[in-house]
Image (cartoon, rainbow, N blue to C red; front, side, top):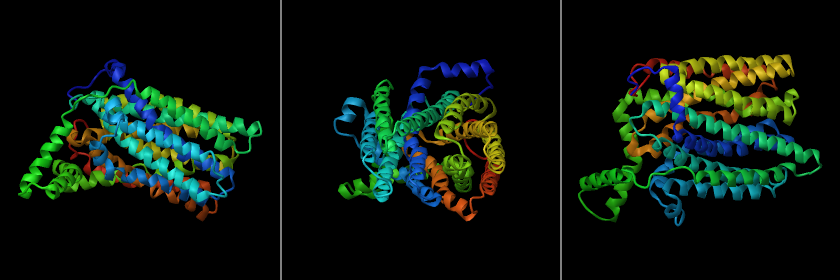
Length: 457
């Protein structure tokens, strides 16, 4: 797919495509909900006096991201009354999920965490489900912005999607933290509840921006899926409601899985799935507890916003774009090896920060290094699975691969708080363990590196 190596100037020019700006916004729409159920929720619970273990286990709501592929075929086919006709199939689904998230934020604004923890987590689960469902459509719409034969643009699009995601997450975090601190300083008792109303305005603004993203009126996807259904139905030997239903289920759920294993072969496919599952577990363990760690070390919400969010966002944007160029020139697999090694090394910086105590310059260094490694890792990962998908099953197959990657980061990382408690608050040892977690995925990638069937390695 990458016929010749581009010059640096040619690689940079790929980002001038107007489609990259649309992908940037799609990424921001996808990343913003993580502000709500990750950093904001964690800090809210921390300041209400809940334990680290409770905060960690609350993160189980992220598990829905690991299983959104199960309903991806439904989203690929079912049309939303009124919205689909007015906005398009993909945008209609996104707007519906944004409405659910907005309503959930309004509900959160009336909840006291210590009195209604179960209800609070339940609403958080609704946000996670809506966000995970939205991601299916966002990823499909992002991939479909670029033609299947535009490999270089796909790598650039992956970089822009990552920049967009981190923009939504980092800048959304800045808004959340500064708003919460402002309301707290002026004496508002339920300052987090009021903050969520402000974040609801951000959701509305994102929906306005969504209207500027182009969605193709017609595609071959649905026709090809119907052809697959008809082939399966003909093999069943009859034409009735039951056989049509069986053909639908087999074609939309079984088809993408069969296609993936047939393309790569069973052993390589399993190797790919193993790598995807393990790749970012160490980063997830660190990320889940990072804001709790910052607070315990002694950093204020304002300092966290400046160093972890604002500074981190700038670093992420710059090095994600550079990571996209690196992936275009060196290949996604080499980029992932580099990023994996860097992830392991940067986790050690947090161990040093834990042992040395509060240090603003060391905090800034650790955050910058962590964001650089995360930028390279994520852009390579997104480009990697984007190149693996079959365009006939864009939403379902991408959602399947992304969900497997998310499963490792969410289900296992939910025990991060319990691990810190088991270590009696020894943050240094915790970060050493997260460093070692990176190694298994790189071993897995090493064994399959020369056998993966993508355009550029």
